Image (cartoon, one colour):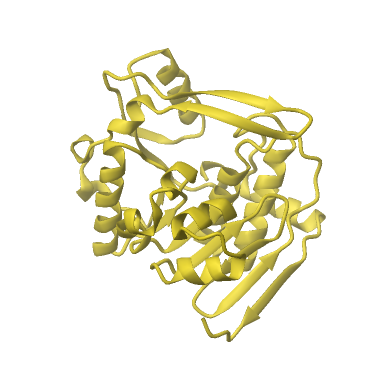
Length: 270
């Protein structure tokens, strides 16, 4: 999102170790405000990634470390003077802090994008109620959507069920299959761009960041779906979760060069 020219501040918890220095250096390179990237006695999170070249897929073993201990005492809520908050997956004490942030944002009319991973989606709709009811945009994949609702149902029912929980916009990705979205009055379908897949690591995050970065700029779901899919397609062609993420200009150029069928159906009754 910083590559889209947006002003970004990160609130997280890192350890006082070498890995934290690597992360901070990378963030500084992208002009991200680190004022609230606090150090802690716990180790900086890290992951071991197993990649299958044959299946073009991966398994990630993640140690959450310091990121599980983000407290409301680590930052001032009054300094959340922003129009948007991107809320990722936080566990442990950090999840309770995420709930407080979501409720604060709701009171202050700050827009929230919520992008849970599978281990957070497994908390279900009741466990995620405070955040879901505060979110403007919910982005997740089909398996995560089924975990939230506790049902193995198809995309249309998933979209409707999730929309009833509070978000104004719901987007569901499904790997190489069609991307689906709904808002208050329309449904959307986008066929992903056809590219040579090298690794799927980071593709979902690239989509969500591209979608929100575009939506902040133009508030168009159609454009944001295309831009998010372009950012994801670029990452899919390389190893590394953030390798070859696009600037907004390059994402627009990608969309112009590559065809992806998009369908819009409005005036629907949900």
